[in-house]
Image (cartoon, rainbow, N blue to C red):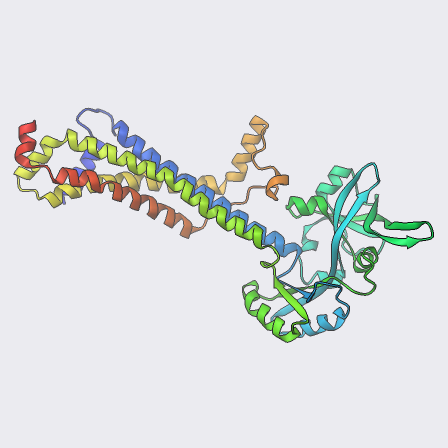
Length: 411
């Protein structure tokens, strides 16, 4: 195995450099390190973003939603709820009303989206109560639960009153007038999703029906399953059971563009950051070509002593492999450490510079989510090593083609 010995010797020591490692080899290792670490951090953040997004969506909404076929008012919801709750794998069904309103006065009005539900039933299908920071979810028709961002922006606390106005109007003796209610703030929640925390309000089912003039009807029914992985199976089963008078949608059907965008971003970022590894591979090519030129005499002596062209090729291929392995190991270690602490690092830099790298009103969340997936780490490391190994084949072939007589005459 003298090929391994020579490969390590050429990697660690150079005739014209007295240091532990040559400058160009060092640069090649650094490029591999940066490429692998950057890929791991970005993929971990994108995976964390995807997981957190699913948690937030499922936390406030549900696995499945049942509408009428035309998404009009669902009048016989009590019968449908009974039918759903008696279905295997369904752990809860909750009717709800949702839609846009306006909160505040004419001078200071802001949009509000209400979620109106029956609290005992809602507890079985969403995690809204686990998001409660203060107050209670057991509210009356004259109360509302709001997000902490809305409370902060409007200076509201529990017990304060807010004026909520509908966009629709009712006919009065004085002409068309919007429906207006003054509600007491009974609770404040924090989901970590900026849109929910700044725009969503929770009220009773009766209050929502009153705002949208639904009578005893509702907009739709949320359905919670005992296993979210059965969502596609149960989607088909419930659609068949309820008939085509109703439309059953999965949580993914209700957010297709957002989920597709996250998947697309992850793939695009992987491709872009692989270019860093490509730069590292090109550095390895130039480094090994220079080593081949520097070691021409050594190659000639080895060939004269009986070394085959395959052995010479192996020496320089192994040198490229060692560079890739060192860079990949360092990159995996550094990338995993940074990925696991990316939110802390971001907050530290923000504190020092005053610049926000992850504004919650843009990226939905108030913290940078990150999830290190061992499979992703392995794929990144394998791709980087494979790319660098391929890059080392050209200079290795160049060395193998040297004629021993010409090599010794050159020196």
